[in-house]
Image 1 (cartoon, rainbow, N blue to C red):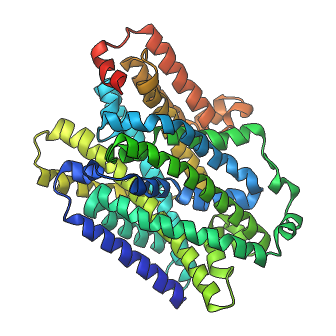
Image 2: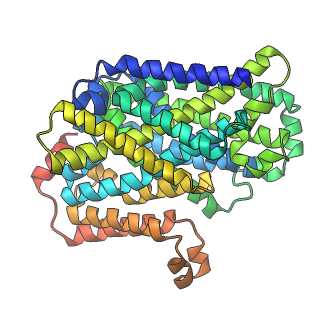
Image 3: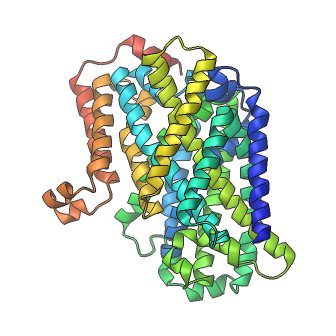
Amino acid sequence: MNLYAIVLSVIVVTLLTVSLTRLGKVKTKADYLVAGRSLPAFVLVFTLLSSWIGSGSLLGGAENAYKHGFAALWQGGGGWAGLLLIYFIAPRARKFAQFTIPDLLEARYNQAARVLGVVAILFCYTAVTSYQFVGGGDILHLIFPDLITPDLGKYIIAAFVIVFTAIAGMASVAYMDVAIGLLATFTMLIALPILLHHAGGWSAIHASLPATHFQVLGDLTFIQGLELFLPTCLLLLGNQSMYQKFFSARSEKDATRAVVGWIIGTVILETVIVALAVTGSSLFSSGEVHARPREILAYLGLHGFSGSAPLRLLGALLMGAIFAKIISTANNWLFSPSTNLVNDIYLRYINPQASNTKTLAVSRLMVVLLGLWALYQSLHIESVLKKSLYAYTIYGAALTPVILATFYWRRATAAGAVASIAVGTFVTVFWDTGFVHSHLPAVVSERDAILPALVASLLCLIAVSLLTSPPTEKQLQPFSEA
């Protein structure tokens, strides 16, 4: 346990050092929110990769793979499809060069779209942050079972994340992600073949698990596959954290190049994560991890590398890499909604003339308050996979359609956008309530919220837009130039 404690301590100190070195360069709102629009492609690749692959993949995706095998890649595959489309969106987003997604929504639609966008983002992003705290707490409990309970671990992780995020904003987050991304990528790539060897090779793994673990859909139906695919695809297409990274890019060319590296890195890492979890389901098919399969990757780091000192060190590094990725993802998803409260509410409606000093102080206060809200949510989570799909669906159904329409459908109107955001959020939040289950047939009510929420959102966007007056050329001009 001393080895694991040392590795985690080194990671925490390294992340804190990176944050503090960026602190002196944060002087203005642009420095804090979008790193002074100075991030090169290399940094963008790793900060995009680290913000996307967190507990949703490392816990929720791994739990899915432990139970269902490679069919879990339907969840990652939604992100891959979204990434291919993002390649064409990135330069447009960088040319627009705002601070947040609600900035974009008001410029294209109206103030109501901005405010509703903030509400949807707060629901989604604090939910994502909350299950990062769950993942970090699980890891600390696994390493120190007699000292740290899972709930105490959540409090400790929340404190780390709030401090790291508040220090230097986007610059702090982005440069920490470079170190974390490199550590996680190389550690997982090295760990997989060693664990495969420990399990007796691929043929032994195949023989020890159900045949469905190696089929395209596995034991899922096609609709269940879509319910994994669509939320991740739609979230990625409209992901504010991603757009903020594009807004932070040094140039349009840097934004486009970063997406290429992001696609390659995401496909590799998410496939490796699923393969690790499948290998873990063969190595540890029973015991405590069988009851808590979301912990399989951390459990592999703790119990899958017994033997020589180099192997034990690799296990500690794998555990540390997972821990660092969770911290990184929490940083990204906590920082993003805090910028909404500052840029889209405080500076827009409360104190438009605020000085840079006051803006930075309020920004850090918002990080603390939202971090505490996310911590509260984390104390009531039963399933990371279910919570992640809920968060993805809110964003994917409520915001992604109107964000894409901003760039690609000139006929979309402010009324259509407002209706789409409101209905998409409403259907997602209330879909799992007793009212829905008691008033709709089981074949409908038992489905995941993504399909009804997305259909309702799209119908509102299209129908209301077609029934209202087209947008003016003044509204369309910035996006036509993009």
